[in-house]
Length: 141
Image (cartoon, rainbow, N blue to C red):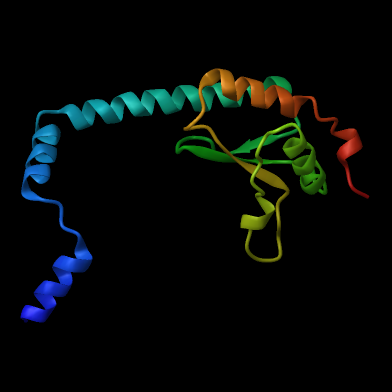
């Protein structure tokens, strides 16, 4: 038993009691709930800004299930993801592949767009850059 207790304390990395007590007070005094409300509002605002900017500047990117979270997927016209992603990278915008995340035979062209770590101005500038990509020249045969 002693060996297991030692192994658990070495590998488990328990938080000390003072830190646990401070965290418990933070939660019971309502600060954590207030923090969550604040973060939800912040991230909702950033998501809404990204959605509005996409609609305005990149109408060919269709958002999927953008109801919550810190990122959402957009679909792109079939056969365009690879070239559009290269063009986005060339203007300094990271656009993680949606196709790479799809399992099974049905793959979707698209991007996974995160917004949590970006300020509203950064979101707008990045989307404007995407909007300058010419879709018609981006289609693959």
